[in-house]
Amino acid sequence: MIRRFARPYAAAIMDVAESPEKAGAILAELERFTEVLRGSEELRAVFENPGVEAAGKVGVVTALASRLGITEIGVRILEVLLKNDRINDIADIVEALGDMINEATNTVVAQVRSAHALDEGERERLRAALEAKLGQKVRLEVSTDPALLGGFVATVGSELWDSPVVGQINKLRETLA
Image (cartoon, rainbow, N blue to C red; front, side, top):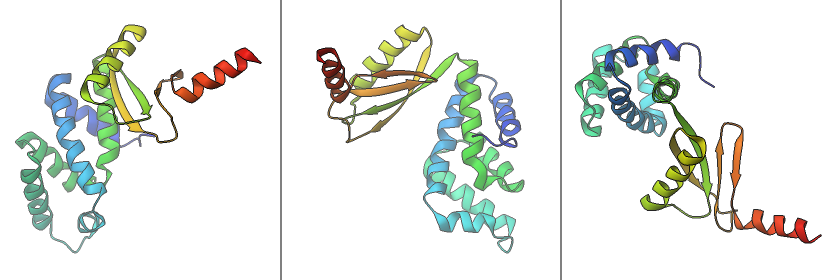
């Protein structure tokens, strides 16, 4: 669930980006920063600590952004979030930005669980098949689920496509019963 404060920040990023494509590039940069922040309790503690000077926090953001290959506009966005004490809330802002980009590009998100890691060709074929079925652009969010014997389960909104081997076996059992 996106918290209310995140939408104005995401809208501002969309305005600064001037196009959904440019906003998508910024989103990718902010996602990289978010993953690093999510994985470091110490880093989050530095940003939360009022005893750490603002200049020190900016230095940390700048150094980290440089290592992550974040562009100047991405750094400025991070600095605004830092100044407004929202840097540790970046995941909510990134989620809101992703939703706005999807809406602007008529894209839906497909949550896909597969029995094994999908290679790029498999991802592309799955994305193309879902796009043909839905008549919209599809962005895949793929995870591996060892409980599936084979195949995949894709969810887009309230629609579900179930192609795992277990599902097919259960359907066959129902047919034979």
